[in-house]
Image (cartoon, rainbow, N blue to C red; front, side, top):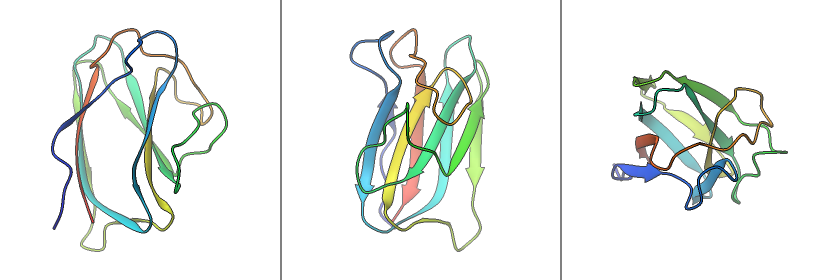
Length: 117
């Protein structure tokens, strides 16, 4: 099963915008995600069903995962995984609302390992 190696998700200019990216366009199934937060503040990882990079201020995520300060969350999936028919995108912001675009205060706050095909 192909997987993305651990990838540091961060903005090149911390403090100016929420972090967003497209992982893969086209049908994608996520089988597991490990989210680690090295900051002293809770962060929110948002997963999007999109074929293009998400827009934090206007797109609605499929799910929002709160990653506690200095904590790790493992997103388990059953054998069928979590389908993203259009593609898999992610966003990281400082607040939970769907269209929150609160910037991170420092780069490299969140580290993610995602298993997907």
